[in-house]
Length: 221
Length: 75
Image (cartoon, rainbow over all chains, first blue to last red; front, side, top):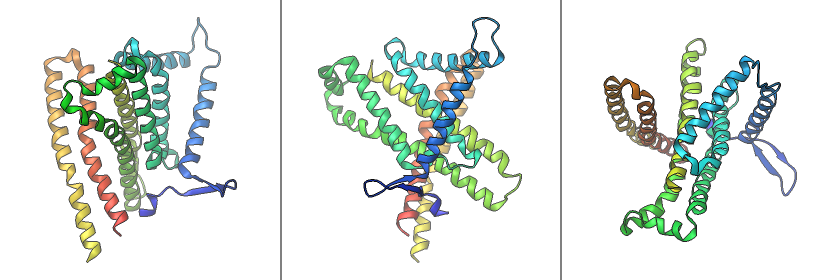
């Protein structure tokens, strides 16, 4: 049970004393291949007239996501939407890939830490870009000067909580699923898998992207 | 003896889940009331509910992570 927590090294690249490749990296490569293949296949034969069902679904999904993010970010943060969309797709695939028998890469603390670091760097970059260096530093004293330490602490707390939330949720559902599979290996895991693998994974992907976009919105205000 | 204490510690850490459960319960009941009062605002309400639930749930998750860390590192 406990060895499930560590991400195993799958193989080692024999350069510079050997670079070890862990399982989460390999699964991420698989997800990348899947995303690239899907995005190549799904945009074939798109028309303006006589559109196919596939195109209707595709346009509907992409429009919904774009409108949702645009509603949060507004005109000022429009350029960050593509990044958030790709993070959303990656997280949805990463969290639900447990159905196919792979270990979800977001079960590895290093993956979620990297994702939340990317998020906080983007948030602060958006703030600096919008306000300029001086105003950005000044914005730490908002609304009154006495809470400056808390505002500075927030830079570290936000990625930590983003990272731990995603990691804890995925790890928790993974552990519960493994326990159920040990207890009753047939039939019973199916509805639980629907909840823990699909529903929880999608909700957590949504929450991660939603919180990141809220932080960006707050930074560029 | 040592492993018993570790198990008790992990159990206490997971007690954080109680607070998250109460919080999510209150939030959901209020959201249901709000939707009953104003059904046309359901989209906005459920979006806010989801965000609030995610934030409230985080405390339970922290407790879980601490419990796992206790079991892994104190063995």
